[in-house]
Image (tube, rainbow, N blue to C red):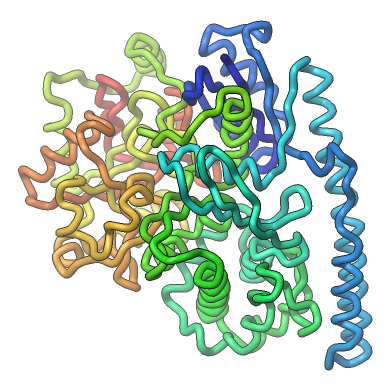
Length: 561
């Protein structure tokens, strides 16, 4: 059975599942080079069909999301009415009440329009392809995590900005079934809360939330906490998250005029710290109250791109292990939809994923022809990993373009930039070279067998660490040997690697370890500033020239600046 999954929201993506296995997956942004592109990814569908030597007639079912909009289910007006009453009976002054109710009404109209837009997306897919199945947004997120975890029984939590009239859902997942326990409405969105802080501090919501996380480590959360803590809370009675309209500062929108007072009173790092602290508190309170002791927890949805929250969750006493689907945002919806379809047809049970190298691969002959055509200086040697390791030890910056491209927001070695982690100053000069914000920490790639020498309390999150989806506390040895990979809060976001995961990259690390006795290198994504991660050899060569890197290890060739 062949199923194509389609996601059409931010970072629209396509996957092909054959007999229960994800054979291919790619986001359309990698093809059209527009970061976070959204819309029906027909270009990516054609690309996947061509790459896998399939035609439309070979596909049994197409699968997508947008169930509530397909049913023309407008937002729950009773919930909006309840919010309106809370505002009216609050302690806010008359003018503030009027303002908050106005924003509440605007939000309702916005959601009606959003549902109609999703309905048009789904209708377009149904007209283009004959056999189409449609699923709930959060169920698709949950399916991507649960069916990829390898756990027959666990809890699955999704949290994001908006999707099919919900902003989060909790499921009891057992024997291939996702049983919904609770949900939060879109006007109580934790994703919009964090996005509004991102916008307030001058960054792009839905893209730069990671910068707020990086900045938060430099701040004192206590300074702005009394204001920001009022925005969101956990509603114990309804087992859901709550956006506190009635306290006068929360709005479920990125451009929140109520937050302007914060910028007058506090600096950016303290605002970021308070926002991060409050988000952690609310999610942890929810998990402690709703998930029993010794549970496994699968996570998906854009909020779980926040690696520090994932670390905090993994360290809770009631959580035995966590797994975060590596493409946790809307880019992963295509996989979730396709897995749901396969389960319903074949009673599919969860299978642990082995890797996320699901995109295109390019031949040495294609690369050789490009190098010759564009007159690059390059060499081909018998032991390239040893050569690269020595150059890294000497302080060079090396881009790696190997094998199949990663699916998801993290570069996992095949579309990566590597540099040694010995000098803390790399955070300044490499960020400048790559035109990135100076407070953004670089992540290490670590030989798996040295995991516990570098990081603490890792047993509950080993699966998350394999894909750079959680931070871990660093040991003293890690700080001494790899200071550039350790953030100011003494944590790092590692990628664990063994020779079974990625042999070429493992060999580079292993050769580097022989020289340096250090099992870490810095691994950051290989891309031009504000562009998606490189996909093709042409993308890689263009990025190599513009980013002022020293070497490019591209399949069997080493390109020299």
